[in-house]
Each structure stands twice: as C-alpha cells, then as structure tokens.
Amino acid sequence: MTEKPHQPSIFISHSSQDRDFALKLADALTDAGYRPWVDVEAIPDGSSWAREIEKAVTECGALIVVMSKPARDSEWVEREILLALDLHKPLLIARLDDAPLPIALINRQFTDFRKRHEPAFKRLIAALGKIQFHQPPPPPTGREAIKLAPTPNSLNYFKYMEQLPNGVENARIARSLFDWAKDNTDSLTFSGRSEPAFHAHIWVGAGGVVVFSVRSFSKQPAVEVPLQYLMPFPPYDQAVERLAVLDALNRLSTTPIEPSRADRRPTLPLAALATAAALDTFTALMRDVVAKIRASAAG
Picture 1: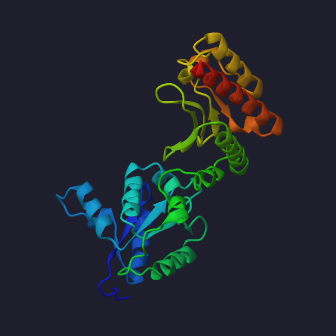
Picture 2: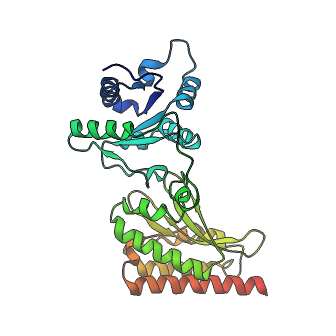
C-alpha cells in the first residue's frame, strides 16, 4: 500500500527480547500505509542512541508500546512511555502476555495479542486509523487526567493491584485500609511506579511519621508497619513496645516474623487480613499506635 502523504512516524517501543514481534508489527504498519520507526532499523551509524530515541518520540505521530514481561522490566521502554505521555502523544498498547500493565498504562485500552495475532494486528491498525495526527487531542483534565497519570493515585492504584495474584481480594483489603486511614490518620500519599504503594501519615514531630504502608509487591502484596520510623516517638522508643506490636502482627500472620524485625519494617501479607475480624484486629492495633504517638507528642 502507498504510504499516506505527510504521515508522521509511528514509534514502536519494545524490549530487545520482543524484536521479532516489533519487526512484524512494523511490516503490518507499512502494509497499511504507515511509517513505522523501530530503533533496530532507524538509528544511523555513529548517532547517539539516546538522542535519536528522544528525537523519534518527540517527532512521532503516535507511540505503540509492545508490552510484555521483558518490556515491563525495561528501563528504556518505561522512559519512552513516560516521554510520550509527557508530550501528550497518542499511545496504543500491543499486549503480548499476562505481565501486569505498569501504572502509567493501567487505565488505557490495549489490543490483545495473547492469542491470535492476525485479528489483533487488524484491530490495532483500525485503532490507529481513528487518530487525527495533525489535530492531536487536548491533554486530559480533571478526573480523567488523574486516572491516566503515570504515577500512582487513588484512581489507578487499586486497579493496578487487581492484576496481581489474588488481585480482586487484595484490592478490596487495600481499599478498606485506605478508607480507614482517611478517617483516622492525617494524610495519605502514594509512591512508586514499578511497585506502587500508599502510606498513612500522622503529623507529629518535625516531619510526621508513616504508621503503615500498603505495598503492591508483585508476588505478594503486603501491609508494612515501619517500626524503625516509630522509634523516635514514645512509647515506641522502648523495645518492649515495638515487640508488643510485632507480637500482635504475628498473631495475624501464618509465617512468623522474627523479633529482629521490631527495629525494622515488618510486613504482613494482605491475605492475612481477608476476614472482617482480622481487618478489625489490625486497624485496632493501628488505632492504638496512632493514639499513643499523638498522646506523647501532645505531652
């Protein structure tokens, strides 16, 4: 097919381990009249690889990310995605396997290549045909901007967690802890792209303290109680008080937490809080921790 006139390039972001698929995708785009940009073919000899990649993303009409486990682990794929999002480029996803989508992509539609490739190529090219390259859409605003943000927040974090093992149940527990923290602590913050987390703070001392965090570890999401951060605040400057918290966590856990963790950041699998009774026991423990630290700060 003849290339469409004045057609900007289509950047194909991929891991080197998915190069064969990226080249097949490039052939399909070429056959459909598009101008694909693939780093294995498009970077001139002697050029700066990083500079050429940045230039290609900046000038492209859209970016297609070939998402797979290797791509999920690739720092360069992440950089290309984030640059494209920062520039408000149209972004399409070709999903090759069941690797969790990164937080930056979690609320975006994808084309499913996990089974039959030929129909998926047609769907992806049809989606590309709906893009007005010379009239890029305005950047999202309001709630939509928050959902599509490349960093974790309350509108994408729980959907991200749903992808993980036992995801729906763990997301339910995490949301219950989030709602409890909204009512009983002073602020909630999010962090992390590869393994997003949220943190419940109380504002005491010079800069406040995190009383617990919920971390979306890929193998086993967990709630973390950073006892080492509590050590400056009475009564948790005393080892016996930290060990009492650790003992309470151990009563909820099926795997013993070593006493040495009383000076560190012990974690409890979210699955340990699956029942209403276990969740109530944990939040009662956190309520007691918050009350004691606030009382010591007020005194």
